[in-house]
Image 1 (cartoon, rainbow, N blue to C red):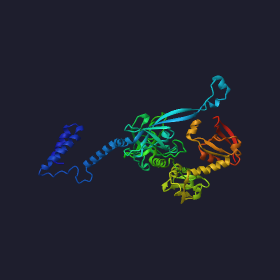
Image 2 (image 1 turned 180 degrees about the horizontal axis):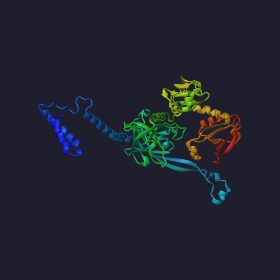
Image 3 (image 1 turned 30 degrees about the vertical axis):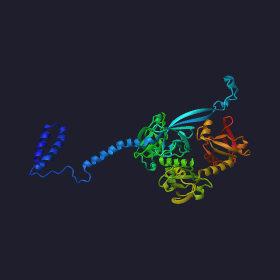
Image 4 (image 1 turned 180 degrees about the vertical axis):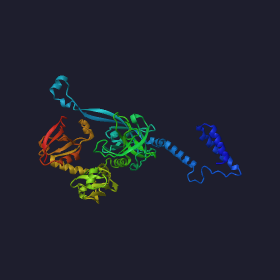
Length: 507
């Protein structure tokens, strides 16, 4: 520093308060660089920042400023781009409900005290609901949740531009809680674009758009809190949720969850809440699953799923150590159905499936989801851990309906009946929680249930206290029983609506 500048600095330091010294020094130094170069005997001062520097200070400031501006406006751009493709859905559903007083119809005390006329067996009720959807193409297809539109008898769609259209249900898939509805196609219809949900990372910023509580075009933001959440709803459904803290409320169902590029990475579906409103925990169906289901529904009106034919369980650290595998990732085969694709391919009980079609399998749920979306009838490679080493097998997946046929045969052999899973509407008619019960379609009069007085239309709810959720659940339970073993069946009589236990012996 030149002597004159040192003297001036001493003067500033002496007379200015300490809090002002740094600021005054900076001002002074700037002025000093402007005058010292005129002195003949003074060497020009080095510039504070070299212009040849690959990252000059002014360039860094500009880049940071641009980045801040880009992030600050990202949500605005996502909202502006996507809102026109997000629709408000109004649904009407008519339901037939079994009269809850029906069991008292022939009760003399009931008639004596209430003197009611003959009780109707069923009555109708009308339910109205609101939800959200997203236009996915110019043909007018709209993706939403099954619980929004699946059981609707009337659907109306309100676009962001104020136009209103009646919509038809194209198809619904309760197992993933997705549905596709359709309004008249128009080349000018705005539509969303889909991103890769597998590539989304925890902590990534996301935007949710929907109609919570009927408030149109509501935009909220948050982050991805977690991935691969399961067990949120019916455990028999295909779940692989993205968890987010973006505000989701009733009415958001079926709306898009977007990344900051404006791509749909999820379909908002559920919340965990004690109040019934947003509490920071929301769930979205991953876009990769959603677009596969949507394409299936549009092409076929239903979803055809692959079938492997194994019962699997998650691999715990203790089991991983026992089987000699280095990490608890994979699906442990607990049982192989005889005659299934897995049986034909040579899979065995105790094998650990570590990859399927080239994808690493983290747990039993991941395997089930991968099998479900894989092509039927095509050879697929599976890597299993068996006896301390990896083994690659080829399996040709069957149709999930084939599983039902095979399992139905075993039920027919053991109980003398043919059954099917109870539909949501049938469950509501009898006041049964959805996802429970199987309905008898055929009875062998000489079989165990036929001899006990069971009839077509009766509903099996529990066996030995264990809830029967579907045909597969019933078949698996029967597979654990010995011949002629007695069981207690909790049954609903389709004629009266009454329930009770009946004891029978299986074949």
